[in-house]
Image 1 (cartoon, rainbow, N blue to C red):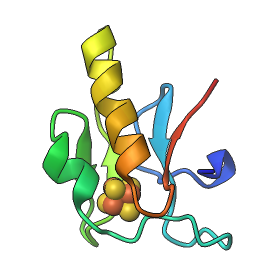
Image 2 (tube, rainbow, N blue to C red; image 1 turned 120 degrees about the horizontal axis):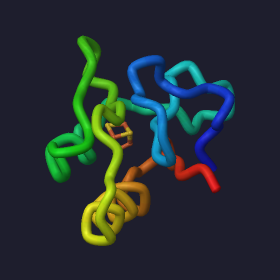
Image 3 (cartoon, rainbow, N blue to C red; image 1 turned 60 degrees about the vertical axis):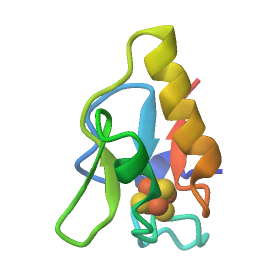
Length: 82
Ligand code: SF4
């Protein structure tokens, strides 16, 4: 599960977030490029290729798009706060 205490600093405030690559639990972003290539309306890469949320989803379809990325992240580095 994505560590909400280790959010990537570039995430915009909101429900979805990505985690910092230094997460000691091994669930930090590994710069695989899945999220920002599949859902570029919400995810961007930083200078090291790590993903972060730059726009939070609003509509049900947009939320579904981000949940798809959450499910696709190979290391569980995308989180959804409840
Ligand atoms: S899918 Fe996960 S590991 Fe890959 S870039 Fe996005 S947050 Fe990082």
